[in-house]
Image (cartoon, rainbow, N blue to C red):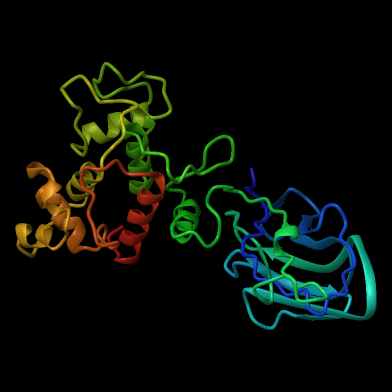
Length: 332
C-alpha cells in the first residue's frame, strides 16, 4: 500500500503588513487562512494551496507563505498582482489596488506544491511586518486572525522542539497519538521508550511475538510486548525486579542515558565527576547513573540547555531532541 501524506497547515507567526489599509470596517470574521484541495496526498502528487482572506475594504496586502523545501517543491504560484518564489522555502505575495476593495472570502493567492515526502509538516503563513495597521496607523492585529491546521497541532513550527519532532517522525522513531497530536510535554513511559529503541535498532520482533520477557505486568498481546521481550533478551533493559517491568511508569532522563549507553556500548573518556560537576544540577544525578549521564553529556546528547535534570522524567519533546542530538553526532 502506498504511503499517503496528510498535508495540514499552520498559520503561526503574526508579522503583518496590511499596508496602506483604507479600512472603514471589517467583516465579523477578519481572517486569512490556507485551504487545500485535498486532505491527503501521495508522494509525487500536486497539492494546491489557496490563500483566502475574509475582510472588508483593504487597499494593500503583503503575505509570505513559508514551507519546508525538503517536504514540498513549488511548481507554480499565482496571485492577483505579484508573486515571487525564487527563494526555496518561501513564496512572497504582494497586492495593491487603486482603492478600497472588498475581500469577503476571496481567493487572493494560489500555490501548487509537488509533495516530496510522506512526512507532513507545516506551511507557515506570515505577513511582511509586525502589525496590521488601519488608515490612521492604529494597530488592528488583535482583530485579524490566522486560521490553521497542522499534522501535530501541539508541535508547531517555531517551537524549540519542532526540528527534532520533524526529524524523528521522518525517521519513524516516534509517531503521534491516534488523535493526531504529538504530546510534546507528555512523559515518555518505559514501554514506549523500548518501542522507540526497537525502531531505532531496526529489530526483527517477529520471533518475540506473543512474548513478554518474563514480566508479569507485560501482557503478551500488547503493542509493546515484543519490543520489551526483545530488549530484555538483548540485555538492554531490566525491570524494577525480575518479574516486574514497570508498564505505565514514566522513564527518567538518567534511565534513558543508562539504556542508550548500554545499547551503544558507550564509553566515557573524561572524568565522570568532572563532567557531572559542570552542571549546576549535576549533584542530583543518582550515583548508579553518573557514568551513563556523563557519557550522554560528553556526547552532547543532554546538557545543551545548561542543566542535566537527570532524575526528571523525560518528555516526548525531550526524547525527540535527544535522538536528534545523537543523529547529528553520528551516534545513531
